[in-house]
Image (cartoon, rainbow, N blue to C red; front, side, top):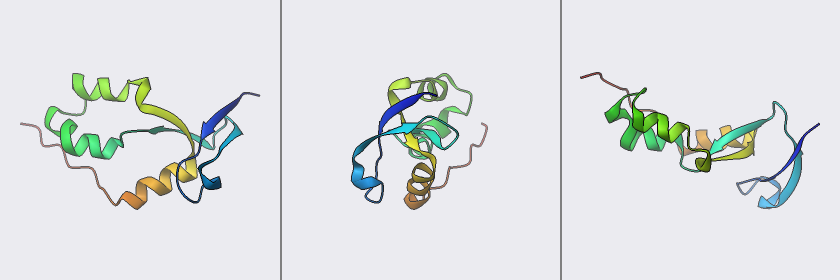
Length: 88
């Protein structure tokens, strides 16, 4: 079994304290810069398979481990939907 120390973000998440969690299917790779915000502000203009979008998605410094339910709840709470990409 592999364990990882991760910071749980959000007020309801163990008070934001660091704690050891088992890396399993309940852990997500969460973005520091939310993907929807990046896409809506920059990515939609270059396209889903563009060099810029791929660089953003492959940038390991933009990821952290986060409990999946917290990651999805925080994403939903942002209330942001992805802009539609319209191919020029």
